[in-house]
Image 1: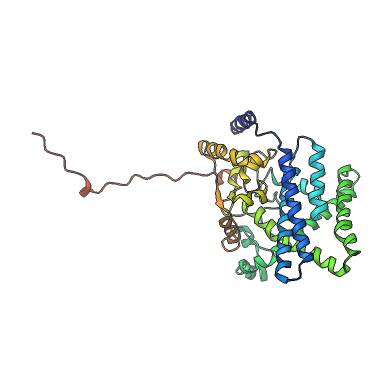
Image 2: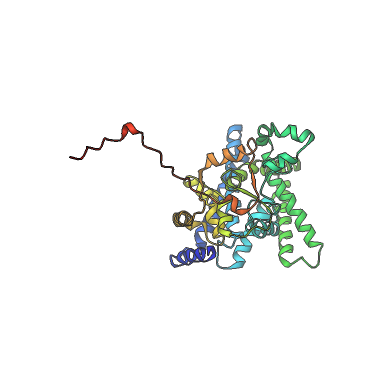
Length: 369
């Protein structure tokens, strides 16, 4: 039944034209983020005052974040009806611009994460392991010094977020090298991926080294990726880590895809620039139910999806952006409880209880004549 309901909603969205790909708009937004990144880089290189250089670096980081989130849309095929356009933009935004393997991203995000968000033992993005414990079972399994560290982990967590993108880069290289070594798995896409990764070092390492000391080039690139870890965390984490986004143990429980996607994800609200910066990632529920649709339509779709969830008894959590980030970090202080099966995370509306009316408040009934 849930598949029929979702199919009906999808058909309605197609009638409204929300399945169309606004390629010009999405490429234009990508161009805007690139201009912002370039402006920040020029300010960083040209300014002499330290405050202006810091400002330039922050502007560069904002532009790079926008490129990354816009590329997420392309990786889902949401930028253009032409597959090659989506592929080129994905290779540009991930392996070339931020040194993260595109084929790894497609496997980890599209193949693994989307079908099973926050399913422990399946979705590798479901928690902060092995560095931190964010669920009750991780705490129960901890021992030794790590059990002691868990008590104060919430203090140290902000100090380690900078490794976020580095870990994804490392995982991407490990995945790609493993595939390229296996003749049964490697495809042309993996070689294109490798070429784009190598071109990153040409554009961001070798060429700049002709104009600046090599040590400065290396330091700049390390700092660029380290600082990028914070905004990427602030964009990606609020959709799945707050307590409102539940976690479920891996098992043979009956599959209800709509329940899985709505119970284990959460939306967060942003302002105009936040919407541009996030490229639809603030609408995680809509994105998980309709991953191939362009984020350009998510604000309109969200009205219908919220009503659909209310009619069908599915959860629809929407938090403020700051609230969502705060509640994400709060899971390091108050870890989430892993549910044994999917039915345990089904949203249940509060039951209204009829309270007895005090006798003194009941008007006396006149005696019959």
